[in-house]
Image (cartoon, rainbow, N blue to C red; front, side, top):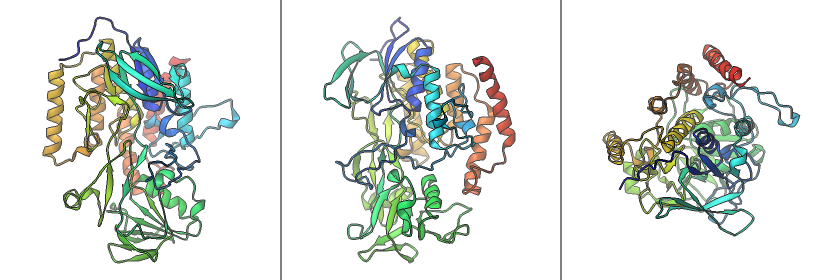
Length: 486
């Protein structure tokens, strides 16, 4: 049966995670009059933007007993979106002055990761979110009890005692990039070189005078390959496809970088054979094959590999993972199937449990912070009973129609939350639901311009751009927030 909204409009809410999504969720909840507790197992806020030079004891990320390090940042990482697009809609990510000289600000349009973390710290301090966060507190269980409340069990990192509390609602904001996704390579067990995942890459120095192969052609692979080219003897990219501005073979900008098709096999003498027949004697293989926030589920068999071409890397395959919320017990109402978390209405609410359980930030291939903000506004307003959700039946019908459309277009389950093709339509829909100000046109144009620049100028798009008129428009819009603040 659908859960009826009581007449009371303000609720006590548990927010799981104190990254960008958890912080803005807490703010929006409090703006609507709710009370919130934010659980964060790390020792500071910021989620994926908290950098540490530490790496895991198993740098490939295979050993389940390894020392886990949840940071996936490398020391030199810069954003791949401009700060104007990254920031929350009503708290612009502008260059700020700081009285603390040890916290020098990054003035670049595409800043480094430290500046993003400082921006989130500023945000939390500005809106008093710090006082809501319990650091070094891991949530071990979340489940609904007969009264309709949610039981939340947590424990401090330094102790084993379990604390049990009850909340009216739960918002899950646990982020995306925890667990490396790996590839299986023919002959790898006998190959004598070193392996690692980009999750554990920090600085280029360990690769000095080495021959390094990077698997992948994503942002991380391209950034890291360019960085280590300055220290490594040779850098080889193994990628399934190249874009229209790339070529296979020797790369024109570097005298020690090559691009190859995917690896066919590796051998006991240290050689790596690519699908085009070329051979490299390599010291390192770095897998830049992405992340999942889940644990190992199953290996895809070869017959399935032949059908799912977009995950084939020659004769070896990804080891698949699935979204995994080990703390969440919904009696099977919310399930995970090949990275589809569902059923979820508009990637946020399970129809049968709405609005008492919700998820922020599952959607990917987006400008994340503004989306987090609008999803959080929607959740907070629905809990307040200010925003009316459709009936459970209508929400479920919408979910089924969405899944049918994905199936008809041939998209596999794991792309359910990839909204790159319609992210701004989704944003505009959220805006309408929340009664929020319209998403500025310059944001959409700037995102598109940046996407194009990444392809045409991968080495320089962060420092050379042709959309200065959009920057001007953004700064004009940001003035109102400065004026209102003062």
